[in-house]
Image (cartoon, rainbow, N blue to C red):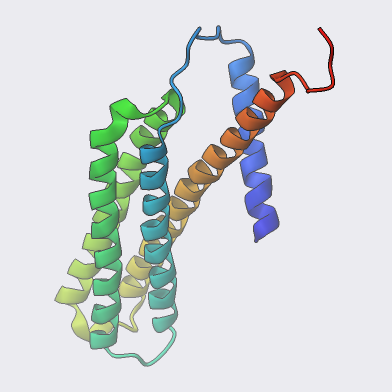
Length: 186
């Protein structure tokens, strides 16, 4: 799992390097905002909670759990998605503080958040209308789709956070390479 994440982040970094190679450099690029980075980490936290709880709900479709258990788990997921929505709102408000990559990340998180909310709403609506059918394929399909949307959104948000960390490390290393060592003579 960790190897996949490292490989995924490496692939993203490589693709960004290739894309950026031909672009002209701005003379003074805005620095990353620590506030935006904290909000992105918060978004990652809530997205991962929604994903984990969605995975648990998906396992309920293979048990004899009653509709009340499903409803309780959907409520937990809804709380996480709502908390994520609050963080995304704060990210949108802080967008102008962010560096270009942070602004792009915020722009890309918005549709993910929307998709998570829409899919969850559809699943809750289906359960509300068909409480006695939690073992039936249509409900199971809704739950599976909710899990997939939440899992993929959480992974994408996590990749952005990991990219930010890798970028910061690379910048620190770059600055260290530029700084003259104390043993060098002029």
